[in-house]
Amino acid sequence: MKQQIELVIRLQRLDLQTGELDREIASLPKHLASIEKTLDSHIRKLDADKATLAANQKERRSLDGEIQVQQQKAAKLRDQMNSAKTNEQFRAFQHEIAFCEQAIRKLEDRVLELMLEAEELEVNVKAAEASLTREKEQVLKEQTTAREKTAEDKRLLSLISEQRQQIVVQLEAEVSRLYERARKRYGGLAVSDGTEGRCSACHLDMRPQVFQELRRGEKLLTCEYCGRILYYNPPMTVDTQTGAPVAAGEGTRVDMT
Image (tube, rainbow, N blue to C red):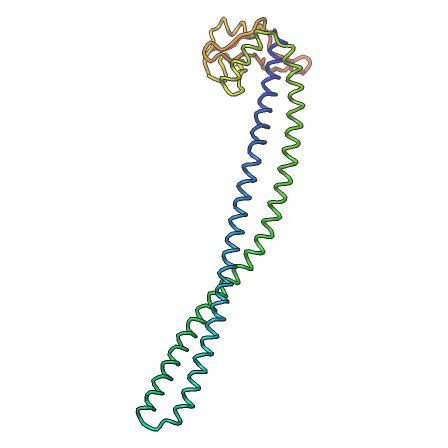
């Protein structure tokens, strides 16, 4: 029976490794999706800033054209004002020129606002372009690493599956049944250390008779509360004669308090 217990301990170790590898394989696509989503949001933000900058430059060109139109109009009015024959005509030209100059000031103020906005946008775009270059390289690196890690994990899973099968065929039917039932119930934790006189999983103290049977290792025992398979891992002591580590003997007193 000791051999059967050793087999289920090895089996649980393999199953726990399988669970870790499965979780890692499942987590890698989620991690990649997260960093790719972040990268995509940064790309969209950069595209939006570039579009805003392009619109800014387009509006400035349009305003520059309007300023030239108003300046030409004002110059033409000044030329015409020199030929005014009455004070009323002269004041009318002055009014029109003032209107053009006011329009020019408003247009120039708006151009100045756009220039200030453009300066900030240009700084942001350049910084974002540099950052995106680094981010794309990092994402590409992580994609490559994830593919390699997934391939390695799958290779390990294949090896573990072969090792598991080799163990399973050696298990007695009842041992296999008890193990699988506890494994499914407790997410892989089907075997529990009972060396201290209690189940290390649920912490239930064993009856002295059960503990003595566990120490003898002559039959398979399960926790009376949680149903996990119990095993006894005898503490090591040092032989005073040889200095070699030895397992505590059957006659060793166990303090159950």
